[in-house]
Image (cartoon, rainbow, N blue to C red):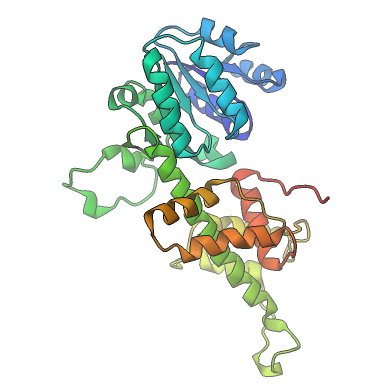
Length: 328
């Protein structure tokens, strides 16, 4: 299939590479011409403007916007809305608030332009591992673009199948790493909760390793002090433990490289989804103690850093290439 991709950063560029390798035709654009030129060498068609992209695509056109949530995404979608025709589709694959998706779809409907929100998880490893996709939008459009989503998803791979799914009327795409979550907004809503849970999981690992690190404190009884090798602890937990996970893999790698995580300050940003998750919990009157606490720790980390926050920073760099903000 043919698809346009706007935004060629850490994830956008690799989305194009994965689609190109699967035989899809990609027309690409970024305000910085360098990544487009690099992707052109891999088989993509680079253009110099959004209008040029729309002109280069055949109807029905599909454009995937992979930009930071907020003003730049709003302006890009507004520009596309003025250029695209009925039957065309706009995909927002960034971390947009699901309520913005609902509004955009409502605004685009009179023009006959379809809108999909695709929560995309996979970070900088997506090119090799594939992307977990949570899709919101009209069923007919989702089905038409299935070859795109299938190419980006990880596939069944080596993960053991869930036996209980056999014989059930469940979406077979889930085993491939992507789902049609529901109408517009559902994809980003599910991804928002995913990221909120991620905050909590990361915080649990971070605090646990901080407790183990401080077990050698001189304030403790001498026969209860343990000088633990945290890199070894992380590694052994990867082997058969019930807390085995990709986040633990990233922690083990970071600790093996630098046991004290000297390269991290512990300044931990939040990208919005954690806040939106707590807002949704408040709207629904659902208790979310752990997720709320993990968000507030990120706020605190910008003032007073602990080893736990260095662990958080190490995991964020590992899965998403998130570099700490420079010190002010």
